[in-house]
Image (cartoon, helix red, strand yellow):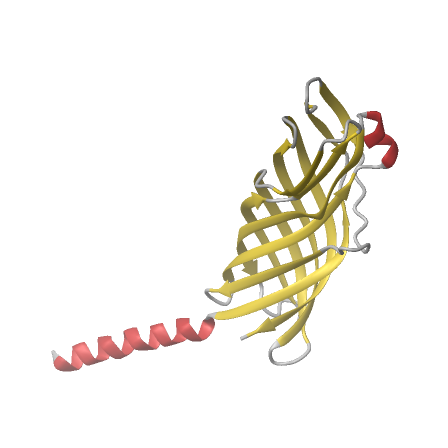
Length: 219
């Protein structure tokens, strides 16, 4: 009986050790080219009246402040992980379109911030030493709302505006034992409801598409 218990104990310890060895943490930072397709904006002006228009957003990824993101991934096994990801995206309303609805400024550029919890899947060394991966996440949008009406009411600050969704797929390539470079495509969607100073409102669904390149550190 003692031998059986010892054998079982050693087996459990071996499984636990192998699982622990398979777990690792990865910190990733990236930037790239981010765009945002048209979306409809609607709401009420401060002081009364409403607006409804289709806006063709500009991303301007490389203008200050630049587009970037951070992701921390806990790989629970060789193939499955959980990640916390922050993205500092940006959208500007073109001058003629914001003027047409009575705004002197209309942008989320500091930025259109998203925070999600992702489920991650990877296929280690599927293509030589390159590892493809994919992920999907749910979270929140908390943009810096920068809106000024022609009447002089100015909204300038961070707001929690609604839920966000993220989808991504990419490939990483090791350049040392702990450092990898990666490239990926990323899509985000957020449903936003913001308050405007003076009593107005703003509603819009924002989608982004991005091609990212970055650096990842494993530990």
